[in-house]
Picture: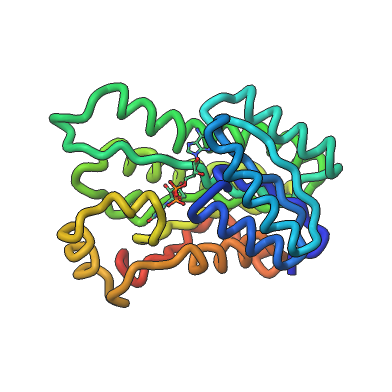
Length: 248
Ligand SMILES: NC(=O)c1ccc[n+]([C@@H]2O[C@H](COP(=O)([O-])OP(=O)(O)OC[C@H]3O[C@@H](n4cnc5c(N)ncnc54)[C@H](O)[C@@H]3O)[C@@H](O)[C@H]2O)c1
C-alpha cells in the first residue's frame, strides 16, 4: 500500500506520531523521524531501531516545528536523502489547558505557535517540493475539540479549528497539482497527552462517547495509512473524525 513511498511524520518520537511511523514502515514506506529537542534524541533512536525491523530506510531530523527555518531544513534534508517527499503528516502538537481567566498569554501563544503555525511552517516548506513533483499526500492532525470546542482549551481548540481551515484552503490551492490535503480529527486517544486527565475527567469523557471507550494510536494510524495511500486519491479537503462517534 505504501511501498516505496517516503513520509515525514512530525513529532514521531511517541504517541500517535510514533504509531503512524511504525505502521507506515510496516507497509514498506521509508520514514523521516522528527524530534524537537536534544531531550528527545534517545526516543527518536528507539523509534528508528523499531522501524529498521521492517527493512525500510530511515532519516532522523531535529526540527522544532514552530521554526520555519527548521521546517524548511526538515523538508530539504528529506528531499536530499530520498529524492522526493510523498507524504507529510503534520502531527506534532501540545496542550496547555486552563480556563480563559487563568490562561496566560504565553500559554495561548505557545499552543498556537506549535499546533497552528507549526503546521503552516511544514505546509509551506513541503508544498514547494510537492508542487514540483506534482504529487503529494498531506495529513494534518486536528482534533474532535477543534470541531466541538471544549471548556479549558480555548488555545488548543482555536489551533485545531485553525488547522481545519488551513486544510480546506490548501486543498483548494494545490488540488490541481496532484496534492491531496486532509485532516484527521481524533477523539480521546490513549497517549501521554491524555494520561494527564484525572479519573473524573476520563469518566465524563467516556459518557460522551457512543462507543464507550477511548481510542488507540492504532485507530489513528489506520486512517493515516488510508489518507497517505493512493486509495484516497479522490478525497481532499476533508476532516475525518476518528472519535468513537463523539462528534456526530
Ligand atoms: N491523544 C489525543 O487524545 C489526541 C486527540 C486529538 C488530537 N491529538 C493530536 O494528535 C497529535 C499527537 O498527539 P499525541 O497524543 O501523540 O501527543 P504526545 O504528546 O504523545 O506527542 C506529541 C509529539 O509532538 C512532539 N512535539 C511537541 N512539540 C513539538 C515541536 N515544537 N516540534 C516538533 N515536535 C514537537 C512531541 O515531542 C511528541 O513527540 C497532536 O497534534 C495532538 O494535538 C491527540
